[in-house]
Length: 104
Length: 153
Image (tube, rainbow over all chains, first blue to last red; front, side):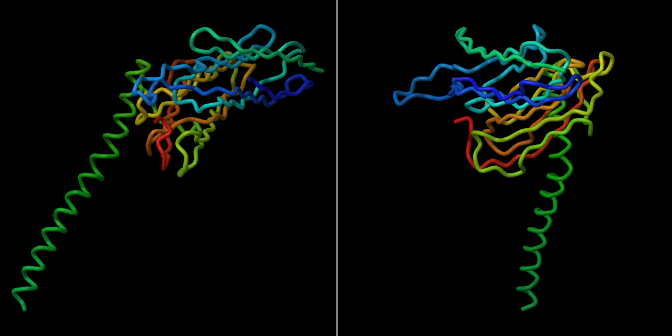
């Protein structure tokens, strides 16, 4: 399950830190099961942070991002509004969280 | 006795010569070809030739016991204005079975070209970070990371 750590308030122009984590195996498709069959790839392949509808930070993830993908990144507080955090999984699964940010 | 030492000497000389030749080959050929290989790899991936730049800071531990979760921090010096900003940063691990690790996209005025995460490394290698600037140029940094366990198995 996803988790984020982001401030509720910021002053205009301020750079603030965001931490985003999702519990996920990140199965690479390179491993075999006990019968020698390839375990199919299933990874989070995209992460998007959207700020009032604008994609402000996007990650294309490949197999070599560690299990339980964690990102720490920095945004500029421009206006009050909504932050959306979206994780897309192989096979079409989508996980998301949202939070309001008040900018003064 | 002199004969023995002569034999010993010639053996040593031979060894020494072999050693020196081997060393010279390593010193002259290896780093040059390694850096050419990295450049070619990035050119193959992106269609552009990267230049090494001290504006790209790639921080990773030199030695890390566990190849499954190696910490990585990237920061690129950039004003992040409409005219001059970092569009994206790619991370490549040339000695992993699948060499692309991640690509981070940024937006001028809104995000900073700075990110931390954790990656998998299959074996000791140079990890590459390649930043694409708004004028289209590619800036590259690399750092050597020694891992004890294969994080891709």
